[in-house]
Image (cartoon, rainbow, N blue to C red; front, side, top):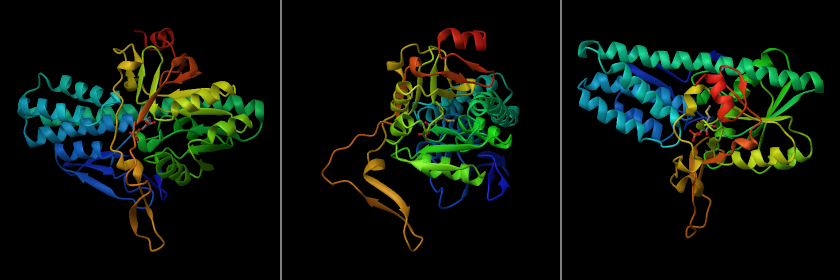
Length: 357
Ligand code: MRU
């Protein structure tokens, strides 16, 4: 998708290094950063220079490429894989991508390891672009159906960033929106700010603006009253891990939106590529929920009148705080899962049928 009219993807390999858009600098500064080593890839994931489940997976895949470049000894690759998987615990794509890379590399002649690793990492990215495009086409039908009944702007609420910046291109939750807009359907997006890292305000609103899509940033607590007033036609969110039971783990605050949607008969869809499905875990209490540094809450970063980016403390120094990064939305609150294969029920049956498992 575009930034200042120029097409980008979020990650690519060029001149022997991995290139990323440093998302900690958006929306005020657009900076392309080079990752030269495995450790730089791990830091990029940990500090959220890259974020969003599919993009974290892709970065881990390229992290393995960088590891192979540094030292193609199998022991080093194994240790590198562990470092990558431990960088962030909740998004399943990370482990999925690292396992896929290791499986691919397991019987390869050492002299071919780099070429095979790079080809597979590129393949993971190209596959994700295709999947996200198809999620868009499948989700477009839902938006179109609402538009055909309403004959007026379709208002869609989203939480966090499940846009192209969270994937390689198109996004998951935003892909149906981009496809609807391209088809001429009038859409407007309610963008949850998404405290504490403000992915909604800093990333989702930013990328929608760049594509010319009308959107309004709201605080994380505003969605409920908008739904009561009939100002939300549907919600579409992303996910970091979807269990085979249809339970969905996503950015903290998603659950409360789903409850409000349920109470107000607003359809609540979750968009995901199959790489985000955890087929093993059955009990959502077993999902590792990331707990991040509380400074993400007590400090806020922004641009002052003199165009300087600075960080200020907004909490009382003595106060304790807590920063859980994800929550669970039980399947019963999910209207449907929008996948690359089609839209299915959020249930074991729905997912089994869709993916023939
Ligand atoms: O902490 P983040 O910014 O990595 O969390 C991102 C999300 O929760 C997204 O909603 C999710 O990864 C969906 S990605 C298309």
